[in-house]
Figure: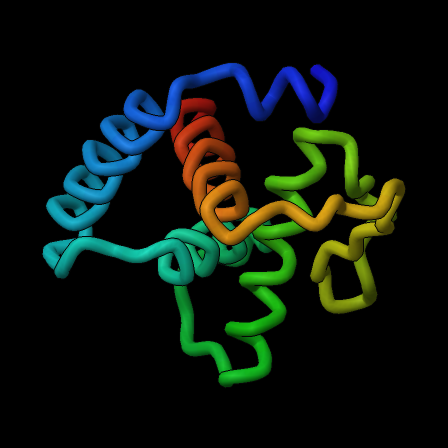
Length: 121
């Protein structure tokens, strides 16, 4: 899938409807408020790390969100998994520079990628 076709794959209204449904599902499963994009990135990072839920430092939480971002953008060909370090944390390599999307485009792309990720689980 090319980057341009990914942007056009779903209509914004469809992305937002699926996003809202995903937020509600996660809120129900975790008995919490509706999660925002940062919370979703954290959850994806924990999933990608593969060590289950546990306490993370602030820095580790930031790293988990970075792992999630790389994993999501790998679906568009921007990142490639290099491997894991000695502690089992995944490391990604930037393959292609991410374009300067507008804030609205960035949000829509992230929501779409997150929805696709959770649909694939």
